[in-house]
Length: 236
Length: 236
DNA sequence: CGGAAACTTGAAACCTTTCAAGAGTCGTGG
DNA sequence: CCACGACTCTTGAAAGGTTTCAAGTTTCCG
Image: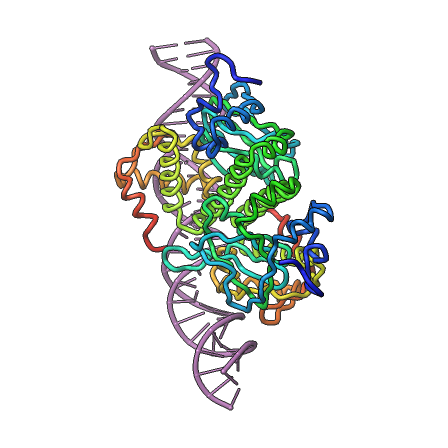
């Protein structure tokens, strides 16, 4: 589906420097554009794909936020990641050609998709894209690893890290980094950071009482970024 | 460096069905062999590479065990993975062309290396290898994710899962799955599973007292695999 | 406006860690 | 071959952070 009219294409997409086209030349981006599908808009709670479903393509968030979730054998939901515009999902499905977790829109969301069938063909045609895909996969491993290391730390550090990370990623994408929505409920935040709902609530409130943040429902305003950052570098 | 004489090559390597050559034809494996370097033997404590070092290649363990470690800002060592023959390391370095953690031999160890400079070239020549690399990266993401999910669980489940996982991986590689060395000290086990040394010791002893395993220093003999497996499926 | 869902907050319970001391293991050298 | 020292492992007791439970309070949405 070739882009037409005012539609956002890879070439004019604001997230080109973050997303798959990152290392490509103009010409290569055009080739990529020819196979990338731009899908319809989803709403809060809609699935981008479901765990167990056959892999149909790599997905890049274009606008809105999503969560990557895994349901364990007891039906418990575990939040693996929060996805922002320009971020890629589905790389982990390439080993079995089956999605191994689900992606759900956290608000109104639009996305692009590189169909699974096209991946080999287009990578053969654009060597730089192959590099780019490996780079994304490699990045994903590193990001997950960092997440893992944070889980060893006390609740306050996990939450501070989450807030600062989200803030920074939003800023990188041109959004306000000082005041934004967490996108997740306390319950979901807990599921992401391996904390009980009550602990999340308590710790967040504690940050607020310390004057480091201001909470209004699910949105945060960062008042003292340094204090949050200092928490992270303090002794284990 | 072309294989000569009795040397183990990719073609006659026992781990060909696990390692990089997994999906390749005989002919493609020969092409791969031409660029894969077989390195000298390392001993316990030797580094395969160090965190921060420039990426020089993807490494496959040929014999022996290794640990993947990360040192945090306080000098604390975190064990990210235990590596067995046929397993690939270094994929996470592809995003920055710098190793982001260190790999250390746990005993006498030999390995192969696909030099970094050759990766693009050989992948362009062998499309199936490109698929294979993505598959490994994808697998790595999945494996890490599973690890992450286990860290939410009680100490006993984490240890049972570690023992069963190692046992299964050893079996897949043709080693005894019922009696083997953990490769790690209690301290290191703790660092891998996010547990204190004392908790590891206690929990392992508890398994032994229950008659599920037999411990002799760092080696385990599994006496009741089912009991360990049942632990994992029990309620959170 | 009203009900449901999400959030806050306290108290008790729980699992894991920390601290500390003693036992066991291993390698080396007398 | 045994003794010694260093290191690793075991084990108990106390401390600690997080969870659970439960009861309010607030927020959201129809």
